[in-house]
Image (cartoon, rainbow, N blue to C red; front, side, top):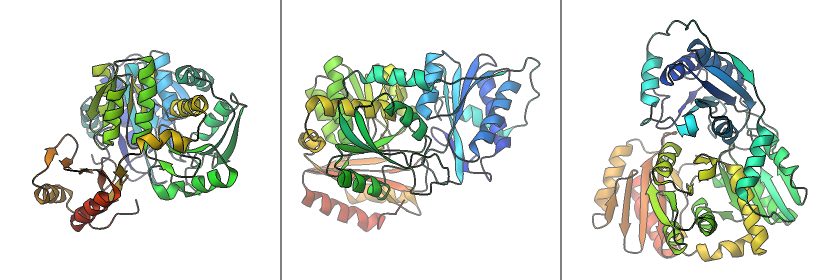
Length: 447
């Protein structure tokens, strides 16, 4: 089934994702979990999400599994429900930053362990392809729960630092995070906030809720400069990712934010492992080692990052897409913990964010660029043949490291695109590298 991806289920709704499939997913997940226990079910703000969540819960009940229905929440809130209540698993109905016509499901099991292609999703897909089984005699039951305030207690405990008087612009992108961020800000009266698009609206009337695309940060950057904010932050559709901009309205690349967070986490947990993705700057590895930690590279994707965090008992992990993962959050991602952490760092250092980040901005980076390529496999082969003298890695797509610069090209797991990241010692080498790469890949897509 085309909607079963490497680490979630996602597609067009209702053509591919509909209530019939949702019920099948619920039942298949119940069978996968051994037809016992309780599963948290949450959903985002898309118009189709409540109906999909209800159908999925019906499938879980048919499979003898109880549900703890947390309603319209962020994905990290759902993870908190699963971890804090020691549940058998959780399902978030969301397509994250995908277009308004999409929807999907993110699944996790006990301890917020992700269910991806290497950890159960293939088996669930096979079950969904067959006939729907008869309901078990002992059907599950539903219970409504509100854990947002408890989740906010958890967030502030993990951020573990003083947040002083700051002025911050926040763009929720009309995603699901707005109401939770409102309740979070109510606990921080000392923080003056300029709010953008806090109203959940699955049609995304202002811009797509995907903060790693620079075009989606235009409003935030303008507001930061107009209102003299100390920093700005944009969240994605389901509230698990965020991207920061400094007081000048300049975007802070997420891998450099990973490097910054890693240094602070390692002050409290010296010698700990820190996981980062294969497209992150070399600065991340350097900063982790400088702080006495152990850097661990992993392929892009939350299911892979979380599995490696558990394997190494990593204290923290970060991805170039704006995911930040915390051991104390069951190795799961939370944008709100990242926001609280950065506010604490900005308060303690009492310097402009651009100055705090300046020592980390020591290379030239392209940021992630997307290319619509008809034959992605052929393009990856062509790239490797074009740069035969480099050090090659296939951990995630193709990474080739040469004297003075490197690049990674990989196929998207969620969109029909080839993604490219390039880093060089200086802007001139970066421009030349991009020129050579784009003779093969063409011009970047607007996605």
